[in-house]
Length: 585
Image (cartoon, rainbow, N blue to C red; front, side):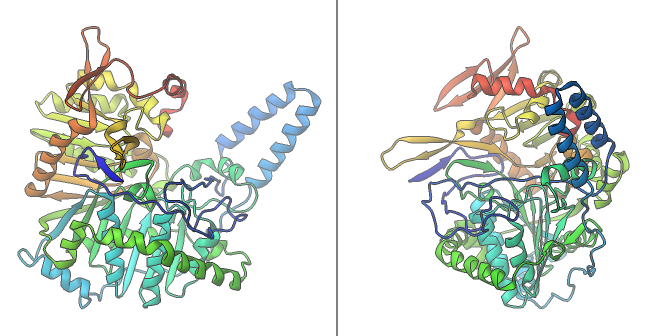
């Protein structure tokens, strides 16, 4: 079986493997966190997601309760009793708090790492321009995974990992296993995870945290006491605001930043869907700034030690789980590991033949305090910096973003840029490729104004990825765009976690790196403009001011007059979800 993919913006190409996870969970504390065997590699892992709540009552929750009370008063007596019981449970569980005062020790990135092997490799890699940073784009998922694994293999003193989510699948298994291997060698591991969409069972996380050289903290966690959904609703105002940052740093000498989380879909380990994403491997002075960003979040009061949720787990049982993780690594992880580190790019990286792009750069981060403050311009540090850079563009802007909801102010901002003669090329998800239908519902209202502003608007094509089987037939797979990149005037490249939607801009924290490199940006721009038509529809307005979708597929010109590759139900759902509050998307 061979995988083929129309080359995505910033690069592409794939190799597919699939292994059943040994970290899957059903609920927080009910199912064993480890599977006992490796399933067929084409079988999808089944797992449930959970959400929860936070530690303070809110006006929104009070309003919700009032509405339920009114409903109960209008219902018959039996229904009223049921609803009253639910209200009581919600009221009780809403009081469940997170131990923000749980004891923890502040720590900072290690600074005496200049004698590590990675420091020497970094110096050799930047020998042609030692005073500047070295960068290399990781456009393929397998390369991005291989880079993380190779860095962990070479770690001697420290690993700092910060992610929005990790799943209990093959990627989570291998990543966690390699963290433990490094910790076994004496490497200090600090692992910071946002809580809401991290679906790994707490007990599996505790296995990591129990290692004497590993400390795991959960950012802005939901209380584990009471009913999880009600906890989330009861403390919606804070639980709704998340740490979306993503960074990975080894020995304070090399770092990876970008849009990828720790899950199969980000690293080409699935056979049912393909996420197109983008990371940047970084060495040089910029790494110290990325480490400082990590320290800011690691030492914030919302970063709660995992041991605060340990309860009274039996140490023997946790030791057994650890053994099963290591066994699973031997059974399945070694195959994945071998695939990831043996890509052409990783071989070049390993033998030192990979040529970096030398550049000055700046780390841009939101303050974690943003999650505790009211929405205001002062808190939108990353979004403000990007808007400033875009406003200074003179010729060309290429934006690739999975989620795009500009709002009225954003449309006016775009009009101001195009009025100066600046070309804007914008690529985002179509309805068929968007994994958040509600986001597309909001975005769709702005397509016409954006097109009328003169933007070259493109939407990802769901069937641009496919599996070619041994018999020559093709099975088309689900493609989803997850890249977050901005190229300005063939000089500046921004890579990070920021989506161009209200959630990223107003509610969540974000981070990224702005790189000043004509060579890097021009290369990425040329690749993007070449490959966008291969994997996306170009949107245009016809003579009746209706949107049409244009693509070249297998050499044939195709024009669609409705949302391409979607069902009637999907289009109806997208219409229905327009009632969702845009500010929450």
